[in-house]
Length: 390
Image (tube, rainbow, N blue to C red; front, side, top):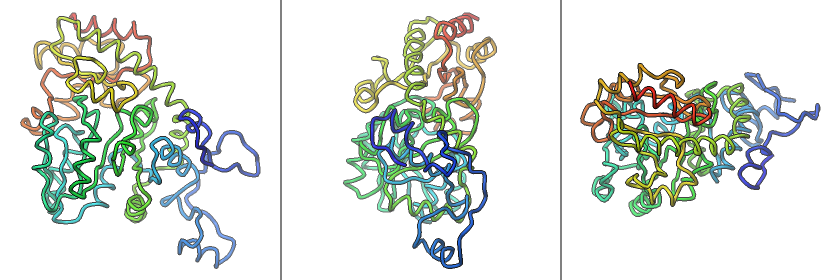
């Protein structure tokens, strides 16, 4: 059942149909397959003359509910859910791209996405070019006759840079190419790329959508036409989301607005604290006035998100000292958890990225990415302060 109401109401009231047991909370449908009344129903169902669940690699009531919720949140016509965020990224790219095509991407992207562009796409004769996030006026000149789409993260991972989605959309429409946006850092609560002109939106549901570091998941949403192609590719290749993870994620979405509001409240306080600390060289947070794209962030985001990037004084040595001194905050590569997490991108998530690409993305040896959690903000600040003091 789809509910067209305010964000919070839609997140809670978009549910699968009630069974004969009249349950209030949607049950877990742990089944690999589904049965049919007779041969004609089975034939019609596989011929797609009748819409229903056939096999959980294709669809499942729990997965359907999760997809419906995200589509309602993003203002999308359709979607397909995946086993992880990277499964969503790869499957979306593989659906859209053919040998000989070209992708234009922002230079600051997740390390695994960069790996796809540089290690695997070339052997399939797919080329990728990067544009500098601070040189957006040069984007149009990088578009080639075989460019299929522009890919962007905003805020970017891990640099927390901001790209103007309406600006990118105008370029894409002018050149008749697609705009694909990773909206993971913002979530649908803070930003809706489709309303700003994006054709497809990708999420790692592992992050703030789950919000508690429990399960993996991913999703791509957009027009029915494009999602249909992604569905057909994924139906054959099998990267689909498990019913259990979908059930967990669907429940998590019911509290997404509440959680993200608190994450953002803590994050702006921590960003302000870090900006004033003598051991911190620079801080990037979308809703800090010092952020170079502050005005764009305010225009297209409701709040600034939960990710803060900053550089510790002393480069690699200073960064190592900071990480070894943290007591409460977790050292992990994940983000979007209830628990505050600190990460050193240069040696972890982006360790295999070429030095020149890291530099272009603003990733320095002393850079720290902090995923601000839901602990009391005073306790987070106290831990950061004592670690910086070492």
